[in-house]
Image 1 (tube, rainbow, N blue to C red):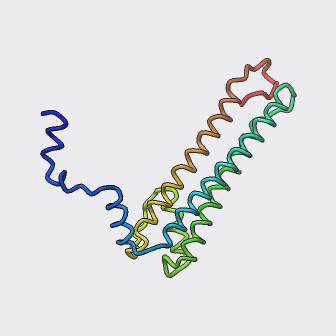
Image 2 (image 1 turned 180 degrees about the vertical axis):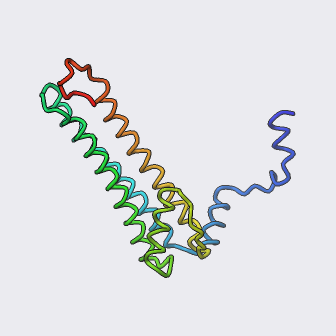
Length: 179
């Protein structure tokens, strides 16, 4: 059986809606024009996160270049550790920002519940059992996508920084040029 035969045998293949129809149905189902505002905020958050990570990584590489031939023991590792802490802080700030957005939109009745929801969706843990109203069912998807992409950007930057530390040849055992 070919793939085309397999597709032809699917019971709902002839009833597939166009993208415009699907999107219109989802938008009507949500009945929520505020979702566009949330999508815009997600894009802005990812933009700011990307800029923050670029600044952190750029500063790390600048410091690393300045320290490359100096005998300041452990300074490269210390700057890497500081970059890790700054990136973690940026993620925590984003979780708090999502919590504030959800509080402003009155997604949940209590602030702690809103914070836990934002944190679980951002990190894609999904531990809690949250019941959302119909108008906010797409919110977890938006928050988790922003978290996934933000973590990916952070991981790429940290990988770049670690690569800079590990790729440098160690001239002597006390140069401080590596880990």
